[in-house]
Length: 149
Image (cartoon, rainbow, N blue to C red; front, top):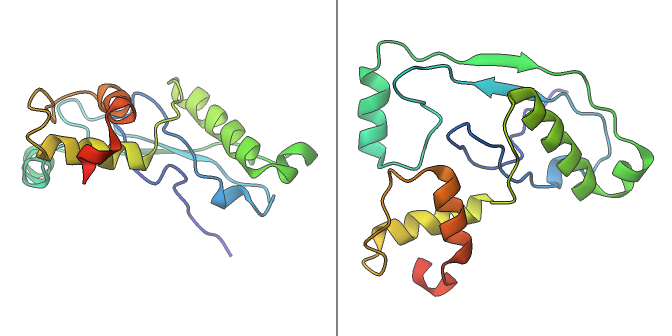
């Protein structure tokens, strides 16, 4: 049976591909990479690091919301990749990033959630939801974990 998995576990603003979790690659089976592009001119609906009501407003008031789905060639893992799910995940991440023409990052969903917590805290008043995903991921990695509680 076919199964769709989003190995990043989150969305980004489309300027990079976030870290892939390895769970989808543990079986060592071939995968069908699929990339999504949101060629909207005013607002990228995949961008989720803004308040929900603002995201909803921006999405619904945009004249159209488009998505382009591109199926990449089937990726068959090597013997080394079958033995190392993390390497397999990294290599598929690289293939997908190359298809999109964007870099990869090691930032994860946890970094993004930490950033969201920092935005809600008064300890970091200079943090703003309008920051780019790249800025937020780096900030979340560098901020003390205790501020996310």
